[in-house]
Image 1 (spheres, helix red, strand yellow):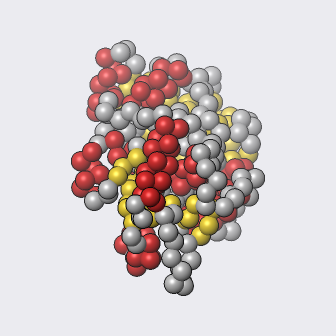
Image 2: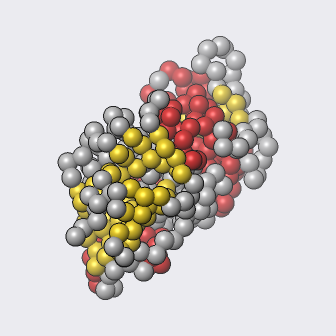
Length: 329
Ligand SMILES: [Zn+2]
């Protein structure tokens, strides 16, 4: 039998009677992380890792949420379950399911690159691997994180010299915190953030992360920022909020910035290739390291990677899930 099945509500494990990141209303949902396309309201019970609790409570409210440590083994119905770090954002987890001597692993979203704000990805040996494939084309290869952060810092300093603020658009949960932590290795200068980022920073603070000299851009008032770096979600550019930051240069931090045309089309002056998802080499490497005999890919351009792995003797399939990950990549 298939241990996980695609149903109308989401990916379902029948012998355990639970769903993973469901989109329909169900009784028991294991959540891989707090991004909106994975953590939805309306479930009776939720299961996640300790580290994601504050983020999930902020998104879901006062729900019935049970949390476990990474690697802690628990039982649901007839299956043995454990959650393991996915390296995507704080509290992101892969789900390991064992039933009748077979092991399945679901990654949620994951990456293999350096992130100072969360546990690194753990390779879990398995028979069947279900992987995200947001960036599953050979063109997607990430530069070294620390060198990219150096680029951000130099861009900021150059703009300051020329009398501009530097507005860096990025996803507010995960990406913004990762960038702040990366910049802190280079400078103690104040870093300004939009209110949405500031609120999420508080969730990180609950797990012991300190945010010294990270300041919220006030919504009211006339005081201006000069030569500062400001992190905000792209949606903030559509509001009057950003007008107070002029004169400014605007950049975007995302895996999509690997393609120059994307930056131009979206009208950013600069693009930094910083992604919280696995790039092409990481996807291939990870599939191989798990030793799985079969892999399913969710979202992304799966045709190329399915073909590539099939040619290499790994049975690969496409599993179309109705996720939208573009915004957070
Ligand atoms: Zn995500």
